[in-house]
Every structure is written in C-alpha cells, then in structure tokens.
Amino acid sequence: MQRKAADGYQQASLLQQKVDGEDFIQKDVCPKAGDVILDLGCGTGELSAYLAELVGPEGKVIGVDPDNERIQLARESHKQVKNLSFVEGSASILPQTGLGPFDIIFSSYALHFMKNKKQIFNNMFNSLKDGGKITISYMDCLPPFEFNAYMLLNPENGERICKEMYQCETKTKIEHYCSSAGFQIVKHGKFCASFAFESIQSLLKWHWSVTHGVLDLSLVTEERLQKYLAPYVGENGKPSLDFRGIKEESTVYRLVGVKQGTNASEEYNG
Ligand SMILES: C[S@@+](CC[C@H](N)C(=O)[O-])C[C@H]1O[C@@H](n2cnc3c(N)ncnc32)[C@H](O)[C@@H]1O
Image 1 (tube, rainbow, N blue to C red):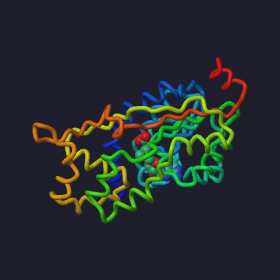
Image 2 (image 1 turned 90 degrees about the horizontal axis):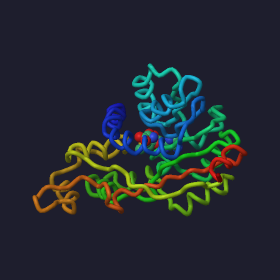
Image 3 (image 1 turned 45 degrees about the horizontal axis):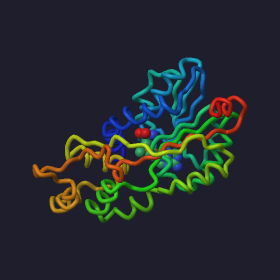
C-alpha cells in the first residue's frame, strides 16, 4: 500500500512539480554549476533530478526524505543521474546525517509536514556554507479542497491527517523561526499553486498519495463524495477541479533566506 502511495505520489504530483517546482527553481533557487544542494523532503525526487541537471557534473544534489518507499522509488527512477543521491532521513536530525555543508537547501511543499520548525531552521542554518541560502515553498494552512477532502471523505482518519500529518504554521511564525536561526530573509511572498485535476479519480489519487495512503479510499462512499464535491459543481452539473487562481484554494508561500556571507548578501542587496 505504502509503495503504491509513493508511485501514486510520483504520478499525481507531476504537474505541480513540473510547473510550480521548476518555476521556483528558475526564479528563486537559481543554482549555479558546481553547487552542492540539499533537497529537503524530496519525495520521489523529480525536482532533485532537475536540480542535478542544473548544477552539472561538478555539482551534486542530495535528496532527503523520511519516507522509505519514496526514497527507494527516487533511487530507482533517477539511478542514471550520476551527481544525485538519496538518503532516508529527516530535517529534525539533519546534523546527525553528517551531510553538508551545502550551498543551497531547497525544500518544496514539505515544511508544512514538519514538526519542530524552530530546530529545523537551526539545523538548516548549521548545514549551510557561509553565504548559502534556503529556498522553501510551503502552505500556511490547508486549502479547503484538501481540508474538506480529509474531513468529509474519510472522517475516520481526517483529524489524524489534518492535525498530526500536516503541521501548517503562519507566515509570521515561519519568519520568526527563520530570522531567529540567523537567516536574512530576502524574499517571502505568496504564490498561486497549480492545483488542477483532470478527473475526480485523479483528485482522489492526489489526496490518497499526498497523505502516504492514510486517506482510506475504501471508506469514500458515493454520499461522502457528493457532499465533498457539492461546492465545486458548476451550471453544467459537473464539478470544476481546477483550483488555479482561486486564492483560498491555491495560496502557497515562497521563502528565500540567506546565511550572511559576503557573496550572497552582495548579490541580494545589489
Ligand atoms: C508533498 S511532499 C513534497 C515532495 C517534493 N518535494 C515535491 O515537491 O513534490 C512532502 C514530503 O515531505 C516529507 N517530509 C515530511 N516530514 C519531513 C521531515 N521531517 N523531514 C524531511 N522531509 C519530510 C514527506 O515524506 C514527503 O515526501
């Protein structure tokens, strides 16, 4: 089941990874040839592989994720990429992994799953080279299309998903953790995520796989599904599953912080 959820995540997240992840990398991560990058909460590693391509053979990328099945799938899927490796681990034990120091720590849609963010920002700071930067995309709260899915489709596991798996915190709190760890925040703003689904099946697959299979699809009755989809049904009687551009459904934050060092601060101040 878990491995299937990893496969499911790889397929279901492709649009969001390709469109949003690559856009973030091009606009804010801006890797240079030779950079050493950590992809924290790398999932199945598609964006890690993209970063590896950008840093070239002189650079290297390490993807870290606590989900063993996703890490195994990442290794299999990207085994041809020489400057890329994957390690099972967690942001909260980053120093114990012995990895680093890094030029860049990149993290896409993973921070809102992490507990102990204060410690995690300290860990990231200590794992970066002077002048290095963190580039993080995260959600400050669950959008209604996700929250309602968990609570209405699978109330048996809804609380566990919304309150234990997700660890969303406000922008103000994230900013506090980031500055307290010693980072200079150079960018912290809203971005509209590409949450759009071709069919009810693909939406359900997203919810299931993003929760690592905890959302139990066998408990989704027709009645629950109708109740969940009701707010999205249009005049044609069909639900619209394209949440792009709907503020409350698609707001994501992008954060860039620099560990002060001559080169990076010059780059951002200039
Ligand atoms: C929505 S996925 C994002 C995966 C990938 N970065 C992407 O953009 O598609 C969130 C990932 O964060 C990972 N994660 C959860 N807690 C973590 C932690 N404490 N440290 C590192 N990664 C974590 C999960 O296992 C999951 O693979």
